[in-house]
Length: 178
Image (cartoon, rainbow, N blue to C red; front, side, top):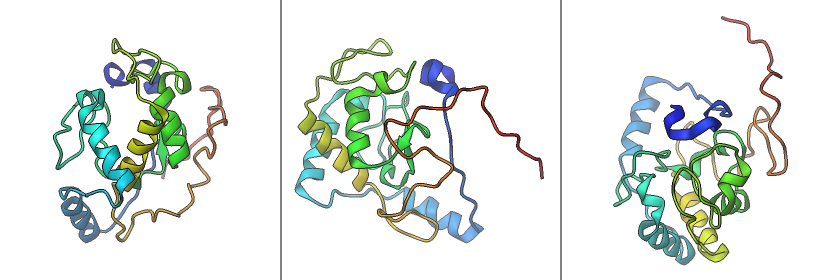
């Protein structure tokens, strides 16, 4: 895993959701269906995303983006967080992530707009382009049982703000086995 995420692989939080088998099968079927942008800005974001270097690493099912190095972004809008728990998945945070990922998460191999990373050149995306891409990625969701509505708050267990620092890796809570 570290070959994909670099040294930042150790700085990841995930949220697991348990559902009944029927809900899981519905989710699997839903994930195989592409989602079209809902507005002009999101449609522009899709165009920019698909013609940028983003597709070299990221995949979105139903599009020409089939990269395998970075996270699959299919249904990205349903995620609680950006950067595996680094910050809440909001349009402002996602725009900052697109522009400044290597500055926000040490060791990440995703380049920023003006910063190279992972052997890749900076993306040279403008803020306006990053905002459009963020609108597109956040549009990649469909509400269904067990999925987070767009206005649902982030779980308390995850950080809630861009400026919130990650806790020291040695500061972990004990977990009781069941």
